[in-house]
Image 1 (cartoon, rainbow, N blue to C red):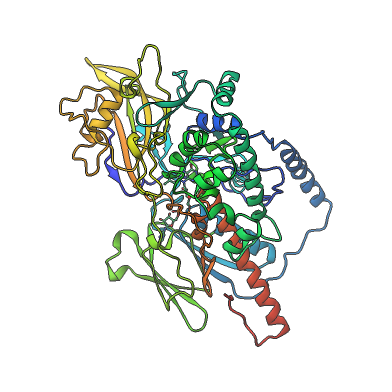
Image 2: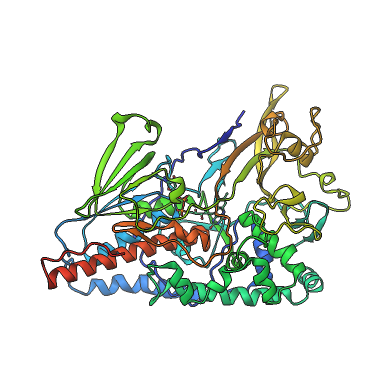
Length: 608
Ligand SMILES: Cc1cc2nc3c(=O)[nH]c(=O)nc-3n(C[C@H](O)[C@H](O)[C@H](O)COP(=O)(O)OP(=O)(O)OC[C@H]3O[C@@H](n4cnc5c(N)ncnc54)[C@H](O)[C@@H]3O)c2cc1C
């Protein structure tokens, strides 16, 4: 039996991919729209996308890229061999990156690229507390079988998230439609459940019938939302380019692109101010903010609400999104210290930084301490969860902010989702394969962070089917099992799962998801639940309205990527911040070099 208990860390991966240096990480953004929809199944994305987007093919860029990759080697062939540029400084820059998620791996990736371009010798060390690379982007295998990896954390990015898209391409990874494995057995692909009824359901995302129904129900709201989203995404993408990139202050950069008016109010107020109807906001946009961020429009700020609707071309990496970050770290040619926790950072008077680390499973053992000296340190994960003590205190100490508490429950079962649970007549009305949720019309939970309401879960997705072999009467038999993912603020009880799948569960009390439940999915028989994996995450912050964001440079030599999470919290934005910090650092090194050569006695340290 392949069943696993609730875990705090995902299982280690066997990760072997060939990493090659990216030909071009930075590309023009003009043809791109940035999109962020998370954990909707792809159908949800396609559906919302249908309302929200005009597709923007990358064909021109691909063509340019292909032509360049053919022509460049030819042009090199007829030129004399280029001499390597001399190093700016004889001694290597020693950089520690703490955390190998999207932010840390992209910081390392970009640093190596920029340092190589500038001829700066770089000695890069990546510390990662977990035994795997990827952070909140990680997979588990159904039945522990490598043929069935499924995302436990960040599951989707979009073809126009160009940091991720470019890296996937340059690292030779295979990008697939995020829902390529969805069974498609039900005609109903998506339903919005408010705890009492399905407020809206969709059949086939591309049918004109659906578009007609959308317009009939919501009037101009889908089009208005699309236009608003495009405008906001266009502003956001200016952060990717000079003169704003790289930006030292996210608050100033956000002001410069006129986005603070979107983060300063709740999604509800922002959408109303932009004449998006309450019906569309509640049923569609809020379903999206709930599945993506576990938050209602009365809490989450306007920027994150609207980027939830930027959903064009949701994709994931074959085998797991973590492969992007794994490839990036490999390409960075860093000394990677997995299962190693940084516990202390001490900033010396001479500008060097001492980093103390331990093997993650020997945190209490004084013998296992390792100390190394660096010139710069990048903290690439929320400082509040890092457990690092820093002395002397930082000039800018990031505020501790509340994060969402999300239970992710993955499981396999021979049963389909029960129509009865949703009050449907299974013969007439099929259960949608993806169930998103919203609040009922008469319930306004405002800024309540516990905003799940009567639905009690954020989403349930049917991910795929798997082949389950059982021995019955001495013979091996194959059964088709469905794999599901539930997002909920509390741990699902055995009762809830039994009711959801209409499983006969004699101990049932009829309760659904309850805090401190004393039964769990593991209490159900193996014949009903053939595999499961549970994980409690702090996946993203509660995105209350705000107009200031944490600094990128917390103290001389101490950099921070996670301030961007209160602005937009995604793999793409963490990757952007990783690149941003790397670019700022190299800019400073160059400045230091210039000032040294103009005044050799003056050696600048990074300035705040
Ligand atoms: C369930 C879930 C679903 C999500 N869905 C999506 C999605 O579909 N699309 C999307 O774009 N985003 C999604 N997200 C959000 C996305 O995962 C994050 O925004 C992004 O991965 C954050 O990357 P990061 O590098 O900033 O942080 P992390 O991924 O958290 O990386 C930080 C790393 O630092 C390490 N670390 C921390 N402290 C120390 C220390 N003291 N020493 C050494 N190492 C340390 C941690 O172990 C961790 O690996 C989802 C997240 C979750 C959990």
